[in-house]
Length: 76
Image (tube, rainbow, N blue to C red; front, side, top):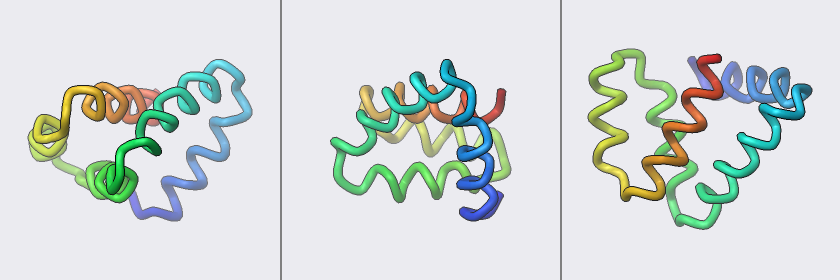
């Protein structure tokens, strides 16, 4: 998924208040960690689930939880 498709998907799902609340909570965590936004975009573009999991495992614990939440929301 390219960045444009990712943004379009998020915008469409933000109409659901439950999704929006969960996404915004995770996004707040991501925004407080420098450089993590770019890393999440890179991880979201990885098509291989094993490679994606390996990239997530390299993140700090709090960041890992936020990324897993965002990815699970996007895969809903």
